[in-house]
Image 1: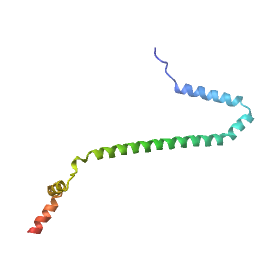
Image 2: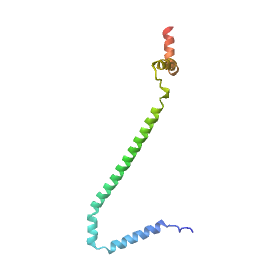
Image 3: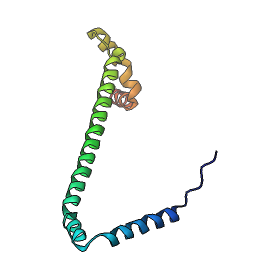
Image 4: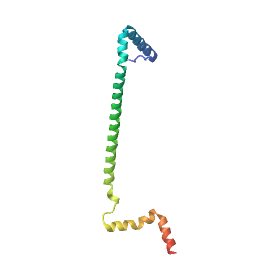
Length: 113
């Protein structure tokens, strides 16, 4: 069974009509009391919204911290490329420097010539 189409304009009209009827039936004294409490309601709404924003930021900060810790843990597990012994460290730097920085080799050749 297909749902009937909702007509937004008709719903808005019905809502506004019901609101107008409600205000029309309300006494002047009740309307004044409600407007006096408007500042209190606005402050309460402000506190609720600020609380929501604060909780959202805390949740985002916590998520970022968890992601950071996961990344640090994964980097700590990738130690395989770092030499352990002094001999391995000496051998590791012998060819890599020239391969990574060819200008070093060019400088050595220039100094020898």
